[in-house]
Image (cartoon, rainbow, N blue to C red; front, top):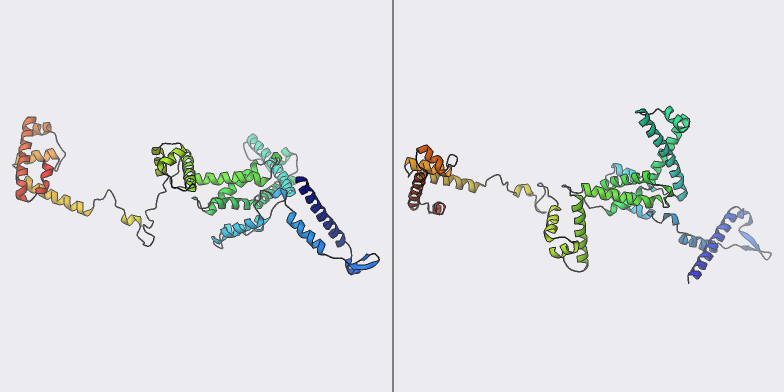
Length: 404
């Protein structure tokens, strides 16, 4: 079966090559002078173009660029660019950049190799410049740089300019790959502009690290650097309060376990999630609690109203009016009750409960009045009994429990 498929494929390719051969040779002839006629057995006949058209269509369908396996297709990347540009202003620099021709040009394998050969030459020149900088402890002049690499100043300047242009062309040609990857992480804490910026950093980093001898195309190599740069940015900047890396990784495992449970058709409990992840339930609840996103106090509490959380959230350091009034009334009642005691009993109660001053012990009060500790306790007990007896007559039965 495999042999028959290969034979059929070779036959198709031979037909395609034959059609191309015919087209090349026919294009070089002055067919208008012959009125598209050829001789068939000595008689003029008109050549049919249907076979060439049919083979041309077959060639377009069967042609698969082996060197572009990993690159994003032109149509798909164009659609992604259009979706991104819809959410941008007309004067937005990103919109203008995406509309440029440089970001729409793909590179062939040969063009990519030629560009990287020049980029590598530019990289070698930069290495020499760094060595001179360390040697002289200053920025080398163009003449010193040219002498170190064995080139004239004009050739050195030309090589530097050519290397920079090649580097920019590689970045522009592969920026659609950045767009393709950034769209996959949209809505995970960073806006599309930040994702594209971080992806561009990864693209430029991959350009510095890539070696053509590695045996793969540059987009294949750059994909992992772009994705890693975007993921790192999401990990560091997607939350108002940054989570440690181990907590972030554990949270990702919990989310994966929860998604698998939902795919199985049920909502997982905390115990089931903890068992799947391999942690204790207390640890699971702690991670979920720390991963909660904080809300702005200026955010609306209800979608259909303009009331914010600031307007309905109580300040724990500010007492509510009802409590303030209750305390004022209680002070008045206590003052009236203390007026029923004699002067020494009233002072002992005030010192013991810190009314108008700091609280004092029995020994400290005894030292003030030259009384023993036990005598002060007896006076305090007698004063409390008097207050309990007077409460009903004063209409203050609510305070009886406080004095028992």
